[in-house]
Length: 290
Image 1 (cartoon, rainbow, N blue to C red):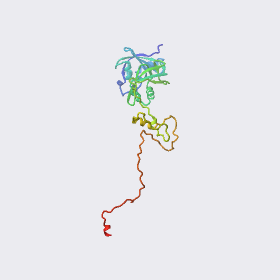
Image 2: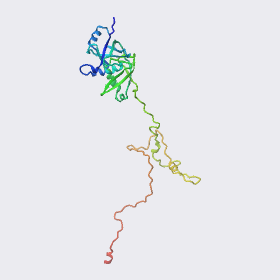
Image 3: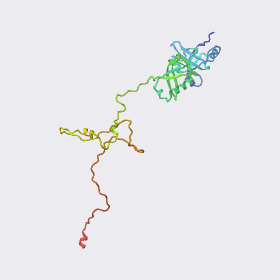
Image 4: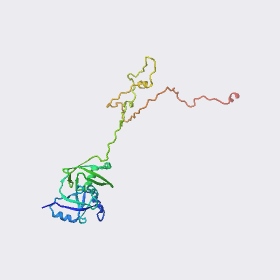
């Protein structure tokens, strides 16, 4: 006894389904079939869940799907738009539908067609939630999922254990490949961060400093200023990992790379005494009175 259901139907996209718009069909991987298909399936000893193989014989394209409802007009089926594109079908084309039994999925790998998919905070959780509207996956299909008003397309690169698997109530590992239009960032020749000489920010050593004296040339010529500035005071050697033992608790030190201010000789000012200046008289009337 033949327990396989197989029949040809005229296919249309879900947008042409009479009545209200069926967004639930467009977001998933299930189709709408006529009531006569349900009657034929119940008479057959088929395995559940009901899974079907869709074939476009003219273009030699196949995919797999589940069924959502049996409310279509006779001899008609309604498919999601992304499924019609995979099968290269036009409105009113003939499609061959056959009942199949698929192995439970254990692994699948997807490749986003656009790098916009990377902008999603948790793409794996979004994909897992969208796959609840699917019954099976086929290798090579380009599925469409909708999130925050944006439609993302992903190519099914690989499925295990077979090229077509059942994903209803399964524990499946998911991996992502780099998006189709993804480009690696260009590497610049220059180093992003230049090495900083830490010794420039260390405080000037006090007390005795070895080899800090002045030098002179035997030929009597003057030395260059840059050479004198570099050798006027030896830099303190920076040793990584040695703590500052002179650190005082409760203080903050901000090291800045700046030259020390030269202190010029300023004459000492005597203690200030108010009204201690000398006075003069403009008109000498005091002497005439005497």
